[in-house]
Structures are given as C-alpha cells and as structure tokens.
Amino acid sequence: MTNPNEERIRTLRETWNAPAKHVTQHAQLSDKHKAWSEVLAENIARRGTGYLRALIGGRGSGKTQIGVELMIHATANMKSARYTTAMDFFLRLRRSYNQKDCETEWDIVSAMKRCSLLVIDEIGKRGQSDWENNILFEIINSRYNSGVKDTLVIDNATPEEFQRQFGDSLVSRMKEQGGITVCAWPSFR
Image (cartoon, rainbow, N blue to C red; front, side, top):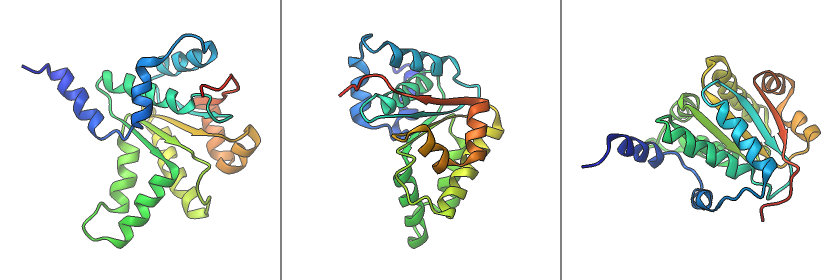
C-alpha cells in the first residue's frame, strides 16, 4: 500500500517542471560550497512567509540548484512548487493565442499566481517589452500581496542590470520581503 504522503508528493512533482538535471544533482551535493549552503538554508527557513527573493550573479554558481532544492523541500512538505524560465513562460502565453484547444492566457497566469513556491529562472532572457514587464509585475505583485506565496527569481545579471531590468517597484518589494542575493562564490561547474 502506498503512503498517502508519498503519493501526494509524487502528484505535486508531476507538474512542477523542475529541470531533471538539477533534481538528479540533489543527491550529489556536498558541503564544500559553504556560502551556497547558507543561502539555501536561509531560503528554506523563510519558506511559507511570502518571501520575494532574487538570486543574481555569474553563471554556474548554483542559483538554479538552489531553486530546485527549495522546490524539493516545498513538495516534501506538501506544498505546490512550479519552475519556469521567463522565455518558456512567455512562449506558453503566445501559444495560447493561436490554439483553441490549449490553456488560455488566464489559465497560465493564474497557475503562476496560485502555486506555493514559484521559481522563475533566466528572468533577463526575455524581450523586456512593456507587455512582458506588465505580466511579470502582475504575477509577482499578486504573489507579494498574498503574504504567503514564495517567489524566487534567478538571473545572471549584475545588481545594476537587474535593477534596470526589473524596475524600481519590484526591486523595492524584493528588498522589503526577501532581498537580492549576489551569488559571487566559485562556480559549481
């Protein structure tokens, strides 16, 4: 007989969209990256508080791995989690305009607003049009206003680039509700 908790976790992970490479790496983590481990622990401690955090910095520093670790932790505690890249999210939205039998724009945006933990990776890899910026603002602001839905955004930007890309309103909310962490430790790769 299957444990109901294990079944629930399996169900939560069926739709979480976490990158398989990072789920597999979960079992291979070591303590040699102390700064990385501290950032992960800090984020786990804040789970469920409605934090809004950005992880920015150089490629290969394990930012996406932190996001996936948070997703593993959330789902192990029976909370929903969703991973997307910014580009994948916007491509899904555009596809919804051209096909009658797929999810609508409302469905896609609502799913991003609804999950307990949302991880948006490669946030800077998008067109940064007013439309994209407004959609992202709507999702992140809705999650911020809920007071209980955690949001992690990830990018390879410098603090200055991130500020320009994300805008004053969202950066201000991040600083209030979680912060911007510059991941300047050695590469995992």
